[in-house]
Image (cartoon, rainbow, N blue to C red; front, side, top):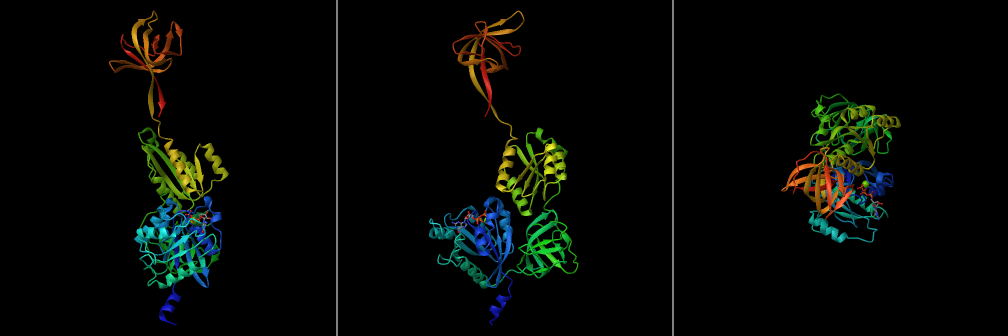
Length: 499
Ligand SMILES: Nc1nc2c(ncn2[C@@H]2O[C@H](COP(=O)(O)OP(=O)(O)OP(=O)(O)O)[C@@H](O)[C@H]2O)c(=O)[nH]1
Ligand SMILES: [Mg+2]
């Protein structure tokens, strides 16, 4: 056996990340490879989480990482390539190069990643592969036969055409790689996603980078120092395992703190001395500022939010989406962000800080909902991220005070100022434009200068109180408070309306 062949056989399994624009069929390709049906179980049919699976094909293992294609999840896409050997860039042939295709191409270029372009949905009649290939060349992705050496495969995830050829191509390309990534630290994991389970506590989806990880070993992060001992390990099928080897996707628990996405975790049978370097991503509570409570009175209004989510990755995606909402004079303030279901403590914080509570892929028990109702706290819970973002935007917009404009009804010229025995002043006037409306707002102008602003409290025509008086008609007008009007002044009757 040649040295090269032997070396390849000793290599860890390839880690492959599936990327591309929303709905181009990433999860369907994963399903076709796995023979499962993940897509059918996804809320709204879109992927909102990073997932990883161990695939056994003709006796060889490979790890597949599925990433979301929706524009809101760019952080997750970046963490999806942390440990990748090869990216599958999925392009639906009926759609071509789209914004997130370009985003992925940028990630590929920035990280100098090996790539296989996968043209999906070739079962569809509208098929632009030739054009897409030249479009890709313009984006700097030069395919084999198009001036470059980037391989490609045509598939239909739906009809399962080209799937086995794709897996063969993945192994072929991986075996051709000169160097495969080996981190400096021995015995390490990389964190793809973290979440909190009500029973188990902190759980993280990790890929084993180096070494064999075992239950009971100490774990450390460079950011947080010692994190405790591994209590349990599960494989991608959620079965308990005792150990896992390189490239394996595993669910790790036992860590006393949650692990940041992208963190490198070091594991060791014996205790190590690693001091923490960084503060948490999830701040428990921002510094409390009394003035914040009164921010509503100032020019800038504030929508204060307590955010609860299922995973660190989705929390990051929501925070960056909410931070990018730009509204004049409205400040969206995430007062607290955390993992897990809504608790009584969240309700108390919401009450103290005048916040609303927004949840993503988490629950509020009937008891919590009832308490929230009695405390008049708004709870909004979602399982589709872009709907959450739209609703927060609407909620923030509802804080913007409407703008008002004045609409003139008509104008009259004062012909005579009469003081009655009860000291009321009647302005005998002639309407020369539009209508004067009883009970409307009014202004009195003298040479275009406003000398009075108030309301018409009485409008008479031939001694009768009337609702309105039209152009060319004489009338008697009494206004809301005493004025020093003169013959020749102009009365403007107007209403105020929202823009
Ligand atoms: N005709 C056809 N439809 C496909 C094929 N592959 C996927 N689809 C359909 O395309 C839609 C999107 O597929 P997904 O696999 O959810 O796409 P995705 O890229 O994972 O989407 P996100 O994760 O939300 O970015 C679904 O309705 C699939 O049934 C294919 O080969 N042919
Ligand atoms: Mg998907």
